[in-house]
Image (cartoon, rainbow, N blue to C red; front, side, top):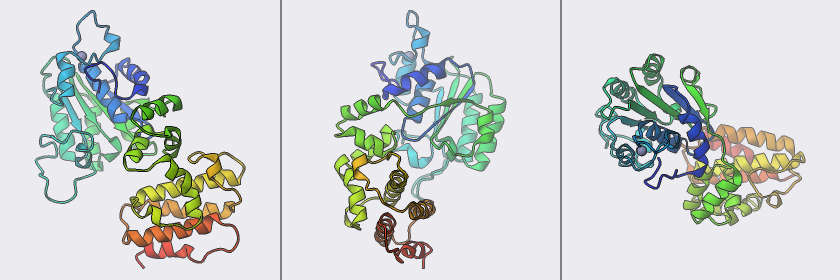
Length: 353
Ligand SMILES: [Zn+2]
């Protein structure tokens, strides 16, 4: 959202925010790669719609960040704004003080849900039908749209089809491949692409990330992910050294990594090794970090195997063994010459055998 200084938290959101505010749609679907700020943009849009800045403040510059409405949004207590998030995301995004939007379900049970549940969507639909407290309509922000479960999605569709009164919906979605055709067809789509590289690097530098260009490339150009990696202790030097260490079969440096991140890093390494093997430039690693000479067909097989593992990486049975096996498999795939029988270890560990 826009702060009291009138500035967006992420400078590259300015253009898409203007594009969104220029639209008259009652429902907007923001979509694009993860890690570029869909949620921040959704909030800024909501804030812009609700902003009460009087003349001479130009309406096309909203949200102002200073009016009573903007302050209520900043305080997360605007009576005409409802933010729907999966329980698991609330705290991370600073909205942990939710008021029973999960249908009265209390914590302490199991893991916080990663889905937006039907009770929450019903509450939002009811909210949208009530009269606006401050007279500028009601706004529901729903993020991420791909986490709406099937039943909840049906509940939402009816409302998106016939929106009540002055209610508006912003749905944001960080999974470009997410299957949301029915929701898509009822919303105006607003794509949010990767920010310009120079802008993202500057922003990361401003947050103390050293060698920001390397980490930004490592994250496929997604600055929020790069910032998170930096915060988790992944630095540019470590990233540069990763291909060499993997080729030497060193598993120790990665033992502390969350498994999904290691799998993702290996997928990127595999992608780049394949690029280099066919004479193209790497995308995620510095060009001098990737050795050529790997066998493309072996890399392709490795890539398929990594994709399969990635689907289950959040629930490994034996994370420690997985790391060893993954590095083993990577080393074998990157090395020309004698094939390794150990490739099968990942598969067998993975199937629980
Ligand atoms: Zn305002």
